Every structure is written in structure tokens, then in C-alpha cells.
Image (cartoon, rainbow, N blue to C red):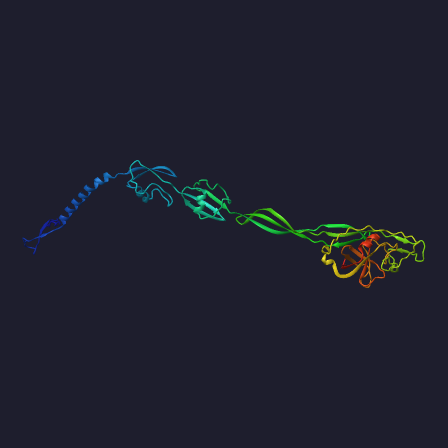
Length: 401
């Protein structure tokens, strides 16, 4: 009633049926049992051959010593290079140790020379470098920075560096710079007996000089840090501003007798009272007496035409120059003659004009007389001076002030 379920049992050989009702004697080969047995033998053989190798290469205990400390490592690596390749030591490119082909033995110590990271600051640029232990000099060379021993550093060039150190370099440069520096003139005063007391007159307006000053300037990274004077040389001396201060007193001259007696003051227009030796009329006879202020000879503050302020010169004239001395009379302008008084032809040189006569100095056209053409007459204190002067042909400088 019930049919037993047929189980598929693998056999090495099976009988092939041609029909349902009858068995036949033909058998067919089945490979499945054979493959199963073959696989079992292969697995046992692989295990058999691998066991000696496993027991022949156990873990090895290696001590690692580097810049981070000392620690123990269990490894099956056969060479140091295999330890490096494993990445356990986290080696950097600049780290170094023994040869990579060195065999690994249990209990051995592997020393690792770790590289360091340092900063280099130069010229405002910050460079980070990884390098082996070295000095500041070696790090600067490695960074490609040009430097000199005289430059500024924050440490000795031969000082060994540690991880995280910073080398600061500043370029020091010295230059010599020459500049022109002005020399201001000063002001001096001189007494002038041809100028009324209380009055002043600018003789020379003054002129600045200059000197060349050489500075030794120190720069740090292009910024000036110090400046010292290396040398000085005066090229042009300043010329002082000269101011004449009047010392001439106003006086009254009176003649006690004679047909030409008159009272003359410095403010009168006594043109006919000329005292010039070239023909000015005398106001008193030989019996007359006269009292006048005899001015002292002023200091010749202009030694030569080159000392004249060019802005002061209005023109020049070539003239014949003679000399005269005291006559006892006042000049045509009413003042008593003194050194610096010049007798002129007013048609050629107006009265009151200032003149510079080489060899005599500065004078004022204050007197007149029977002047020959192109001639002026200089007042001298003594007759001997007049004779010594004689007659000269000179270039006369007409002054503006």
C-alpha cells in the first residue's frame, strides 16, 4: 500500500535501466564517490606538508630603539626590510637604520635613526623641513638659503637641532652712502665809519656752503637698522652774512674868520663846499679854524671782488682813481670826510652811490669837485697815503646796497 521512497545513494557503478519492468545487466560509471575520496586525501596531504613549516617559523621577539623610545615587537619577518614594509614602525623617508637585508633573529635589537622636523625662517619665508639630526648650518644649506657668517641668526650655526626647533636667519648688509649736507652761514657785524650811527647796512647777504658726509648704513633684510658717519669733507665753506653798523657822529663845523666862513651841518646841501682835491672849493682861509669828526678807518671786510655778493653788483666802470686828504671842510653832502668818502662827478655817479674800489674797499659817493672825466677821488687820512696811492686805472664796482 505504501511505497518506500527511493534514496539516491551514490555508487561507483550503477545499473542502467532500459525499461521499467526489467533490469538489464549493463552498468554505468559514477565519478562522485571517487572525487570525494580524492579531495580528502589532498587535504590531509596539504596539512601534513604545512605543519613543519609552521613550527619552523614562529614569531620572533625584536626590540626596537628609536627617537620615540624603546619597545618590543613580535614579528614573523625574516629581514629588517620586511619589518619596514609592514608599516609597524611608521618610518619616514629620511629615517635610517641597519641594512634592509639584515636577517631578523629572536632577541635582536634594531636601532632606528629617526628624522626630525625643523622650521627655517629667512627673508620672511617659513620653510618646514624633515631631516636627519644636524646643525643649523646644515639645515640652511639643505633649505637652499644663501647666508654669510656676518648675518644674524637666533642660534649658533654649529648648534645641533632638535625636533621642532626653528632657525631664524636675517641677512645683514652694510652700504656706504654719501649725501650733501648744507652748511648754514652765520652773521657778523662790522663797524662802518662812513655810515651814520644807529644805521645798519647789509654788505653781503651770506651764502650757504655744503659738505659731503659718508654714512655707513646697516640693513637687516632690507630695512635700515643703524647709521654712523664714516667721513666728512667740506666742499664749499659758507660765507658769512656781513652787516655794517654805522659809527659816524653828526657834528657841526664853524669857521671863526675868512670870507668863506659858514656853518655846515651834516644835513645841509653844501655842494659848493666840496673838499675834494680835484677842485672842490674850500670854505675857509688859512686863518680859519675847523672842528670835525675824524672817522676811524673801517675794517676792509671785502678783500677782493670775488668776495662781493653777485646780487649786490649793479654794474662796473673803468676809471682813473686818485686820492685826497683833509681840507677842513665838510663834503658836498654835508658830512665831514673820512675813510670811505669818494669824490665823484654826479653826472657819472650819483651822490649816495656805494662803490667798491679794489685795493681801497667800499666807499660812498659823498663829495664833488672839479673832476676830470672818468675820474674819482678817494679820501685818505694822511698826505703820505695819498702820495703812496698816486693815480691808478681800476675797474670800479657799482653796488645796489
